Amino acid sequence: MVQVMERTRERAGLKQTAAPAVPDVRPLVYDTKLLNLWYGNHHALKNIDLPIRENEVTAIIGPSGCGKSTYIKTLNRMVELVDDVRTSGEILYRSRNIFDRNYPVEELRTRVGMVFQKPNPFPKSIYDNVAYGPRIHGIRNRQILDEIVEKSLRGAAIWDEVKDRLNTNAYSLSGGQQQRICIARALAIEPDVILMDEPTSALDPISTLKVEELVQELREDYSIVIVTHNMQQAARISDRTAFFLSGEVVEFDETDKMFSNPEHKRTEDYISGRFG
Amino acid sequence: MRITEKPPARVLIDREAVAGRMGFRKAVNAAFSVLFLSATLLALLVLGVLFYRIVSQGFGHLSPAFFENFASRMPEKAGVKAALVGSLWLMAVVAPVSLILGIGTAVYLEEYAKKNRLNDFIRMNISNLAGVPSVVFGLLGLTIFVRALALGNSILAAGFTMSLLILPVIIVAAQEAIRSVPRELREASYGMGATKWQTIIRVVLPGAVPGILTGSILALSRAIGETAPLIVIGVPVIIQFLPAGVLDTFTALPMQIYDWAKRPQAAFQEVASAGIIVLLALLLAMNSVAVLIRNKFQKRY
Ligand SMILES: Nc1ncnc2c1ncn2[C@@H]1O[C@H](COP(=O)(O)OP(=O)(O)O)[C@@H](O)[C@H]1O
Ligand SMILES: [Mg+2]
Image 1: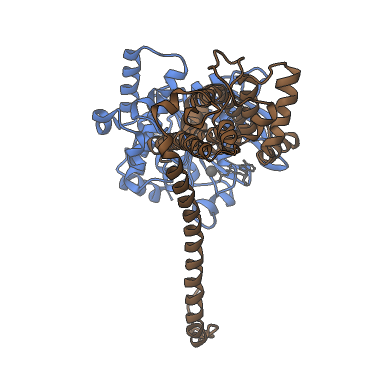
Image 2: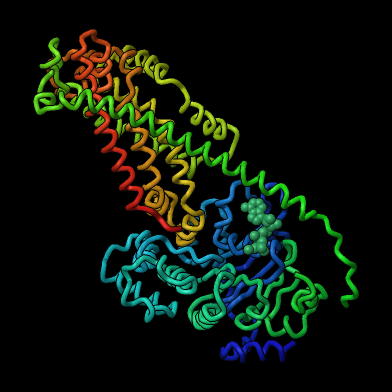
């Protein structure tokens, strides 16, 4: 299994990800404790316990419908946009429970950026897309905005492709470029954490590779939680992996360990492609 | 699993019977295309006859004087000035009132209201309101605005009444336009920490503008042609002055046309036709604006 993984990494042309030398010492960004979530009567997340650490890529894998999106949307409380959602338990973000009655949701979401499954740029210019976040937070100064836009586009590895047409509509870009614009848009609010929900599932292999490389680079500065249904991708880019199954975390471990020597039979069955 | 010898597939479709029915199916197909074409042609024909009659009757009466004269007992001196200006005044009240109320209601129902029985009930009844006859709205206006609020037969009273009349149409059009803005865009905005209001004003409304404006302009052109509510409110016809403000009394194009058309003198029929041309031109202009807006803002999601 390790060999398979290393081969995929080599094929992807990615740098070998150094497994955290001393695991579990990096500070916690998120800590999820006994989280339960219901959509109406449907119990979608069951007793989730999951720590997420600084400057790591945490992958969430599992068959479709197992609650991956639900969990990642709970981390920035986007899940509340759905009517009739109830939760119990705690999610501590930087040691504060985000479910606290007067926790400022908007502030949470400026610290935690999100990238979605389908590229969803606004039907505005590339510039206005990236400047959207800073603008809603009251930044008007054109010079600062220019700087933020350039920095974010560079951060998302798309500056060179779009620097000459910042004023064209983001819809004129390809799907892969649109997704990187969306990543740039998330970077523009200078987040602490980036949540990505299957960011490459709508992309072609080359764009996928670009986004994967980007995730590797972003790990230097951000903590990343990425949902993927692609196990090779999880193996290639993440430090830790959580395996979800029908709303539960079956196994959570260092990625290398999980893919080489899973503890649970169900994990092994899933990552070896026996179901899912 | 290894593939072993396949049993021969049983034939369920009798190709000959299918071929035999082909002729009949084609004939039915042709018959329906003729039927639909004739339905369209009939509609066009009626429109053409109407247009021809009105233009041939009224065109001769269209002159600068027609726009400069007030109503008169003598057909050759009768003009459309008071009615045209009155209709424009009416629009000046109806447009802002119905747009603000209509878009506001639609935004509330689509973006703020939780899904529950009460709100479902409200949504359903707004659609029902769109089907209420305009005379009934006239009576409502008479009771509330003319009498209870003592606005009399002023522009304001008529404007409010007309606004109520077209409000359901505007609300429904705006709701549909708002609903057509993809949920992913809202999520993107909320995901960056935008408040609900910021999301509405920066993402939802800009995306919904073409739909809202197209629907609203069509609703407004209905208001400009409505007669019944004005009659019920008691809007006069013969007026020899222009209104100076929204509390003044006035007359409107459809009222004026109605009055001319019911007069016995043949010459007044021509005046009525000229009035109708003016009204139609106004409607056409408004509808063109709607089309222009729709083409200009067309969004590609
Ligand atoms: N808005 C919703 N309302 C009701 N049930 C939902 C909603 N979204 C997801 N679910 C249910 O919750 C479960 C988990 O869904 P999701 O988190 O989207 O799974 P995944 O992302 O792993 O494919 C599924 O059974 C799904 O049907
Ligand atoms: Mg999902």
